[in-house]
Length: 290
Image 1: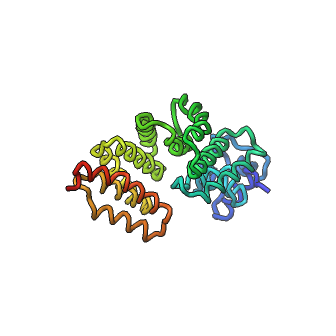
Image 2: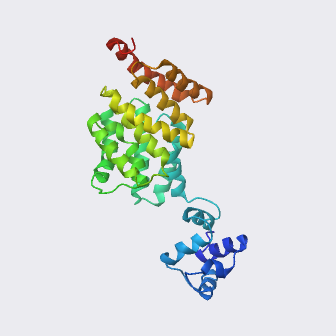
Image 3: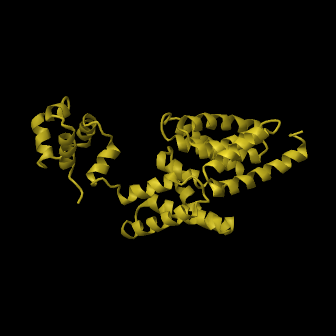
């Protein structure tokens, strides 16, 4: 059973051996805190946040503890969605689709979870060789909602990152550019999402044969990959840098491939080899690697 707010505050405070005086300082009286802990008073949100801060936990951890050290169903779905790094991860996409379907049976009005369900369905279709027109019909309602928003926040940006494939190159680049600007508001967080948009933008520019501009985005991605030690994303970055360098950098290319092999990402290896072939042959024809 989920703890009350008061029970959760008391549980954390007592286990950390913090006094009521220290937790309530400059926020509320010690008497008021005692009433909250005994479920005789509910704190306003404006009071709850500084109380949580004085307990030295963040809001997400507080909710996790309140829910008896479990994430809510919705949080589990969003976490899984956020951590699926490659659209070829069929096992996790099927699991995500199942979780969304089960959740929506009880919460059918949840827009975000329904959109995640549609994305999971579309990505599974994409891997099953469904037509892009059919997939676009599944995804279009999501973009119709998001395109009218003045600001995109974390979950919206995550959703957008997963539907870029339905747009033409110019539209996708425009969307990515806006998304990257929005993510500048989170300079020290959402790093994986920042890298994802940088990589997506570079890929789109590469398809336009704008290797110089793609290279700039890739160098930004490289710094972030190294900072958070995401070797899977680092490998993709290195391979694309190798392709966009003039001449083609075979040493960098092999370094990226070796990283993928060393961490055993067979599906990624297969996909990136196809990507390399799609770019290397045209490069050879133009004599860029000579």
